[in-house]
Image (cartoon, rainbow, N blue to C red; front, side):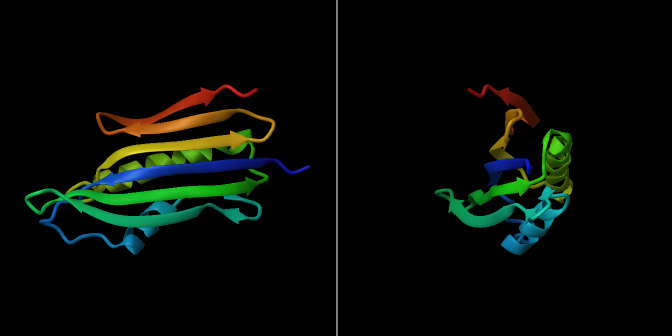
Length: 137
């Protein structure tokens, strides 16, 4: 019997300073896809949306967001550390850019069928990923 893990979430990228070349959606996609979790029938759908909200003075306030969704077959509780490795890679890789790319906010829901569920969040005021178990009925 297959175990499925359902994942859905969004990562909001804060502005990328204008005194550097702007990353394209494809460059951000390449950074995010490294270590992306995989099930036996494939991986997650990752979409990059560049919104480029500008301030009144014309500078960027918000670069855009990354949406994540997917159902990973044969990905069970033993594989959950793969999600932590992937998310740490994303934040570390973004931070290592010069100047750093800032994650403003993120929330990702992870539900393992017949297993634990968790909510993963990121808040720029307290950098780092927070993993909290979710109560299931």
